[in-house]
Image (cartoon, rainbow, N blue to C red; front, side, top):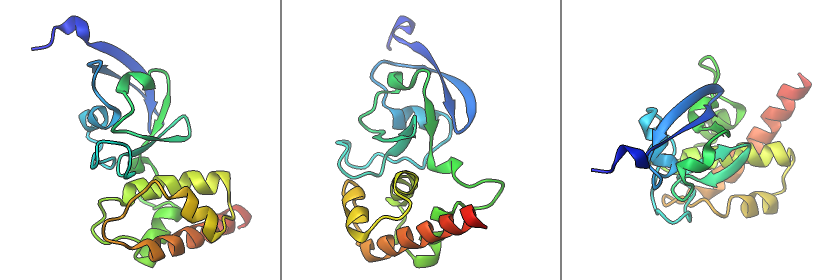
Amino acid sequence: MVPTAAQQTIRFTLNGKPVEARILPHHNLVEMLQDFGLFGARESCGQGLCGCCTVLVNGNAVSGCLYLAAFIDGADVVTVEHLASAGTLSPVQEAFLETGAFQCGFCTPGFVLMVHQLLDRNPEPTEEDIRHYLSGNLCRCASYREIIQAVRSAAEKRKSCATG
């Protein structure tokens, strides 16, 4: 049993809401998110190499398996669960469904968050841009062609939303 003194309280914004959590110094972000009932970020490789545990912290993608929960004190944290609004999927989520850019779905939340970040930073990426940006995300089912199609489709959807 770990002494209570080793625990610390952190406060941060989680998916748009201010929250606090009691954590142990060694807890990573994925473990802490599970305490909130959020399971979209999944620990797979445990080494920050596969992208399954991707979470946005202050707008930047991080590997939740390597990112200590203590580091998010005062931060803005966004998980894949926050992307849909009032039952409506985000353009990226819609594009992934429409193009079949997943098979088992295990890696999909990480890809979706990375694509959101990519399109926020580069609304019209080339195929080379997409491949480079998503190179840290692995799909063991090999649906990469469909993922690239999903990114292109999501870029068009976002452009249509912005102009329409």
